[in-house]
Image (tube, rainbow, N blue to C red; front, side, top):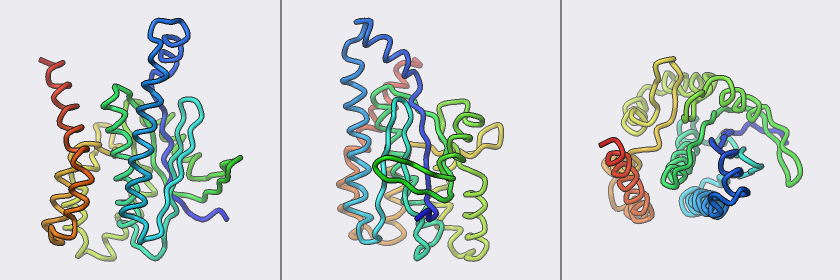
Length: 232
């Protein structure tokens, strides 16, 4: 069935250089480092899905070929667009942050559309839309959001204005508008995001999630420290 999915198309930047360095013998560890980074990023998403999304019967799919990565998730009509969107971009954010920690930049797009896949084929309207975003609009190492998806979120907030405050609290610093009016996902501030959830719904319910994300906080702080030192 080609039910609607949230679909991300991600392009690993500098992939050709990694290949050239590996097979020329300049950096023979390039392949091993890439495998470690990709495995960590994928494993996080799988763990997140099993621990925190199992109750919602949400599963993520990962497909990678060369420097291209496709991450998809069924759009659940039983849940609001905001709930679907929140679950999806949390995985995308962490995926990007883990790769950044390994000095791997990615560029991509996130959209919504019809989607079918099995072990042999991906036949996806959502993937085509996300690929166009990545190849034509993203330009920089950023993951941008399709305007149709943004409109869906906007309309959901119009229908339920009481959710606007919560949405802005959780995602106001996550979805950023760039100079060209493209909205992209910030991978930073994951722990701040979780603390906002605890403030809203009670810390006891989310204590376990805090524990799961403790490594994320350490990783994010170390990455930002490295960036600051390099700038200095």
